[in-house]
Image (tube, rainbow, N blue to C red; front, side):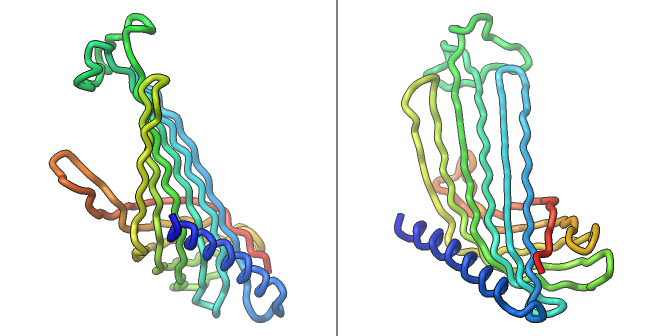
Amino acid sequence: MKPIKLIRTWFNVSLLAVTWIFILAEPALAAITVTGSISTSTTNVPLQITTMQYGSAGIDLDLGQYIRFGLNYGLQVSSSAIYQPVENISSAALADSANPTCPTVGSCFAVINKSVVTERGFGFTLILWAGDVVMPYITVGGVVKKYTFSTQVNDGLIEERQGQTPPSVSLGAGLVLKLNRDFSLKLNIQASPGVTMRPGDDKPRMMWDKKNTVGITYQLK
């Protein structure tokens, strides 16, 4: 747990220190922009309910007209409740969602899976063209991801597992559309290494996670 606490402390202290340095600095030195985005969804199909929430926040400091340095944080929470026939509890066979087999409340048991993924990272943004309305850009940086997974059958004990990726590269590209002097719409595509495990794998392996976000950016100064 110590490395995780160290990373969290580094991120929080760095974000606070850098923010106050540039807020107290002369306006001509640098501009500060903050970006936030949030999304939520709920999907219902026979014998299954899935919910997902995602939020992100970041702060960017201008190092010049075409280069920015930023810190960012993301949080994704997803959960699913899957109902399975009681007679299949030993084999954990899924109930047939096309032909539901839960005529009464007691004829099925619920398997609740929940995952929480946190991302902490930093990066440099290269603005390809500083237009008055449109600004395309690319990003490169680093990210650390922490995973927490939990499983619960009905009201039984919660089984929890945790993991973390090593510091990894993060690549992205996007477009900033200026709405007015202070606010902009930010479209972003981000790719970074993640962890997966599929049937037949003897251990978790790396693969690329991809994320598309739309957020609002506010320029502080």
